[in-house]
Amino acid sequence: MTEETNINWYDQHASDYCDKAIHEDMSWPYADFLAHLAENPAKILDLGCGSGRDLLYFKNKGHAVEGLDGSKEMCNAAQKLIKAEVLHQKFSQLDLGPNKYDGVFANATLMHVEPQDRLNFLNQIFDSLRKNGIFYAHYPKGSGTQQSLDGRTLRLTENWLKLCNNFAWTLELTQGRPIFFTPEEQTWQAIRFRKN
Image 1 (tube, rainbow, N blue to C red):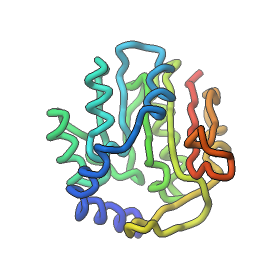
Image 2 (tube, one colour):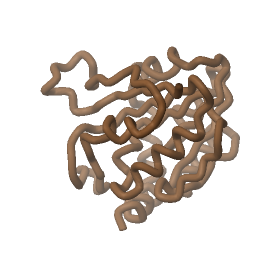
Image 3 (tube, rainbow, N blue to C red):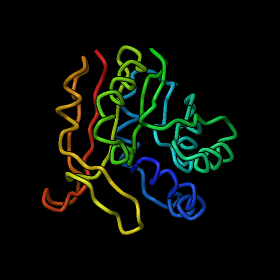
Image 4 (tube, rainbow, N blue to C red):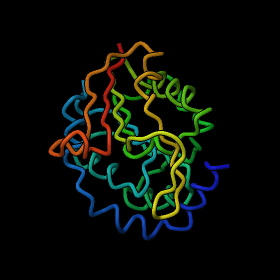
């Protein structure tokens, strides 16, 4: 199963992955997300939190944060960084609870959701958001199963916007990234929805 394969990859490569992640420029995903939260401070879920880099940034901005990851080793790394508990859940078994968050941040996460789990995954996010809460995702463009250079299996689809239309939220952002590249060079997509 691909989900287990990828979880095992992150468990085995957690240290190297965290060392690389800390140096990535996240300024524009943060701007896409934080500036549009209806509450400040907000309650934020970092879905697929990995190293905890984004959790720490949001926490230092004064927000209440929770992280979630399918890899136990990544959860441990994030917990160590932010000095708080991180939820250990697989995306196929997501159980978030209702009306908990003002924002759900999913950076480089959707590519790890198996096709049969996508609707339930989105339903969990939708239900977990409070009124006016936002769901932000940043993910690689493409379709089908692809193998990344580092050995991870990516489940890509161009249908995320269509799947999101099953829920009562409003699309606020859909743009290719990086924004300063031409459309042909933009290999990532950013989307943001607000719960009605």
